[in-house]
Amino acid sequence: MKICVIGAGYVGLTCVACLAEIGHQIVCIEKDEKKLNNLKKGIVSIFEPNMEELILKNKSKITFSSEIKDGLIDSNICYIAVGTPTLENGEVDTNAIFEVANEIAKNIKNYTIIINKSTVPIGFNKKITNFMKERTKTPFDIVSNPEFLRQGSAINDFLNPERLIIGTSSKKALEEVLKLYKPLNLNDNQILTMDENSAEMVKYAANSFLALKISYINEIAKLCEKTGANIEHIKLGLSKDSRIGEKFLNAGIGFGGSCFPKDTKAIVNIAKEKGIELETIKSAIEINENQIEYFFQKIMRFYKNNIKNKTFAILGLAFKPNTNDLREAPSLKLIKKLESNGAKIKAYDPKAKIENHQVESVKEAINEANALVITTEWQEFKELPLETLLKLKDKAIFDGRNIFINKNLNEYGLQYFCIGKNE
Ligand code: UGA
Image (cartoon, rainbow, N blue to C red; front, side):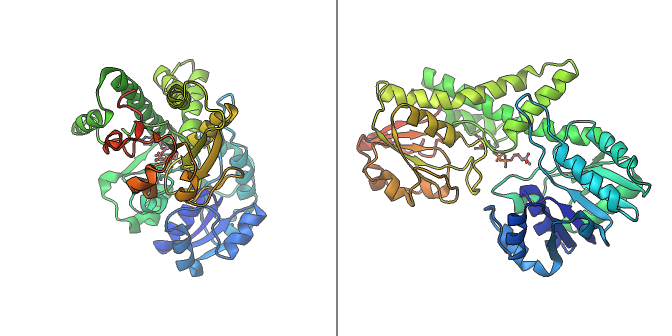
């Protein structure tokens, strides 16, 4: 099938790479000139495992352009994957979608199926359908098809989804979308068709439920510290109950990234406009916002509130491993707190880059550092040899991702602090 994909962010580029991989012809539209020129040269500016490789492998099936009209010349399927940021007040900024919809309306010549991947407020499908109907006489359907891929495993998640949500009331569109995804080899019970509003809601409900799980385990972790329990044992005990499941029970310095912080705020705001207060999700947000301060206070207690001129080796900048994305990264909030209290920072991340304080290796970060702070659980850090850790001047490790929680580092003369075991 010939497909137009509008937007070359994480979601858009994953669609491009994977749809080409399963045999479709793609025109990808990106208006950022620098990004576009790089893509034309085969350079992908975001780090995502296998993304660049897959795009290069399928380059005969992919073209890039800045003009939506180029993508619509001979394709009757058009993906929208543009940003929908949440504003400070919780409102979702959907302007980019309106701009795109306006262009699509101007340029479609035959029946077109528009597949929306961007996260949008519930009811948006109907709104944008009406907006387009006022601008074109050509028939079209808009399908709400939220994306559940995670950064760091985006390609795998897209190609092997646990479920596919297809929100549409058009039989014709549904048939085409099912054909499009047929090569993914999904069982019938993994394909869930529903109305547009429900499809839009599933996305927010899923992200906020996962955020709830994280804030919940972070709260239980605090109680573990006060009661002599160990969060790792609690996690294990919980995970054996299939009603709870084993995923998203890692305590730490909280969730970041471009999705959970924005989507939890958005759903709270959407509900508020309907007169409903989502108390659980509001609490999850608040717990998450306080999590860095909670961790920072562990450092301050160890140093009796004086970290002036102490050097901290910060391992991990990205909001999670296997990505170079720094959006809402807990590490950056921590660095700010440490610095404003007079500390010196030497930060290392295998992929993410910041302007100041960055060093090129773990070794360089630890050299002459007083203490070590783990802020992202990269595999490289999990494998650090003991002798490297013993080089720290104050022999103190603050592990914000619990990567060494089972190692009994105290036995080797290291002072070890984590989330959910001892204070
Ligand atoms: C999240 C969802 O997991 C995806 O399903 C969804 O498609 C995506 O948002 C989106 O809406 O686009 P992502 O933000 O890429 O994906 O990453 P996650 O793996 O969900 O991690 C988010 C944050 O939660 C990270 O900061 C991570 O460190 C933190 N986290 C995750 C924990 O603190 N503990 C856990 O147990 C799991």
